Amino acid sequence: MTVAAWITMLLAWSVITFFTVRFFWLLVKRGKSEKSDED
Amino acid sequence: MKTTERWGSRVGLVLAMTGSAVGLGNFLRFPAQASQHGGGAFILPYLVSFLFMGIPLLWIEWAIGRRGGQFGHHSAPGMFDSMGKQRWLKYLGVFGIFTNLCIAAYYCYIESWTLSYVWHSLIGTFRHVAPTDFFPRYLGMREESLLALPHEAVFWFILTLALNVWILSRGLARGIELAAKIGMPLLFLFGVILAVRGLTLGKDAPGVVQSPLAGLNFLWNPRPEGLLDPSTWLAAAGQIFFTLSVGLGCIHCYASYVKSKQDIALSGATAGWMNEWVEVLLGGSILIPIATAYLGLEAVQSSTAGGSGFALGFLALPTLFNNWGWFAPVAGALWFGLLFFAGITSSLSMGQPIMAFLEDEYGWRRRSAALAFGAATFALGMFCVWLYPGGAFDEFDFWTGTFSLVVFALGETIIFSFIFGIDRGWEEITRGADLKVPRMFRFVIKYITPTFILVIFVAALIKPEGAWGAAFGSLVSGHGWPLAPDSVIGKILHVGVDHYTWFDENGRATPGFVRDITRMLLMIVFALSGFLVWRAWRLKARRAA
Image 1 (cartoon, rainbow over the protein chains, first blue to last red):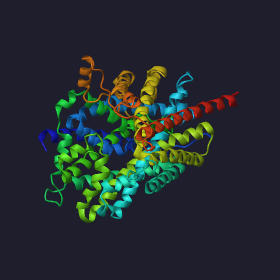
Image 2: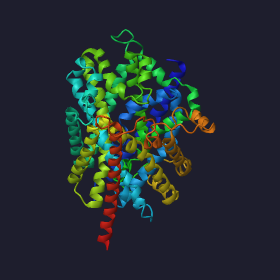
Image 3: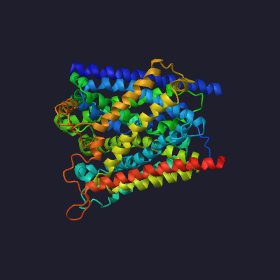
């Protein structure tokens, strides 16, 4: 694989993984606090 | 009968939404599109389209859906009707019935192929029979008559449909949400196993002709000239559009079961990004690297040249897995199992809006509505099964799975921003939000997103044969616009068909006949969907009087 291909791939993977994990984590956290609010 | 159903949990809702978006296209279409249009350069227009068209459209649909649910509407006609005083608004919602029904019909058929391939992988069929021989026979393409019925395909289609109807009849939390909670983690797991196995294939492994990393390089090596080509931008925007399940009416429906003050901004963004993760990280790391390792880059380039990975996925991969010894049947089951879970979580989301329409507007019970969806999908799907060799399937895919989505999305963005009003729309999106939505998205939603969709719409209408630059050159030099056969106008005018006739000299039906009766059928289904909407509102008016 060329260096350009590695950089493009890792950059795209990092951006997508960052937002996916960040939002999913926020969602799980909010879901838990909503549940405890309801309880 | 007014429904009081709700999602069991927010994670369940987001998994169901992600399941709706993650489909076969994530694994078969994305890698082929990316490699065809600029390799690594494709990702830039792809992410730009995601941010300025995909995410805003998701928020628009979630907002319309949650608002519709407050008025007791869980399908598009009622939701649009409640957005303004104009009586015609509800008829845009007809698309939300028509497209879901018609797409479900052929989508369940593809889904049934994956189920059948799981079975045939496990019993070792592909050790003895080449998929290039098996698949055309399975589809009935080896029959002399276009009208012959492929029995095995029918069996798997009925089984798949029955499974869909059964899950739908169990309800939102016990059916769809449970299926997503089981299906999505398995899909991730299967995808990761296949990607790791594929990417770690050594050069000295049996049958390997090239490193799988050559496939990744083909997919990711940036070709900057692609950024200057309008077709790259159109392909990227088109891929974002079709991968997110927008313009269908199913996001609206799922969101309508969310409480009025519950967040939609974070949930919508999470579902969208999760779909991207599956598409880019998993979808890009399985098909092309494995196929490159065993077939070589040239063969992969030629089989993805049309922008689809179907040939590689269904014809090449089952044979290539045979190089994996005892793991071959498992790998086949994992690959087609992954496609099956991607498919079923999407087809369930197409069934729910139709059932919701029958329940809300006609007072049907859930089980009756599920059976009605099954019966209608069966009738339309059998048409695709029966006339697949003549091109009925492609007609369904083009008019309902491509064209109608763009028309519906264009209509809804205009209604949302200009009839409902961006002020009220913005308030809908941000109410209860667990995510601070940047204010610039107000402008994006009002102007950029509709422009994006309008460009896709016009490009679909007049798509040229060859490059866009050459087509404009041809127009300017007085040689006219070279319409592509797969443009909307080209399809209507039968561009590229030499001898357009319904029957050949032996009196047998031709593909032209099949295409035309398929279009007539689709028009009848659209008219019937419109009639059902008209009748539902007429009955309501009578009851109110």
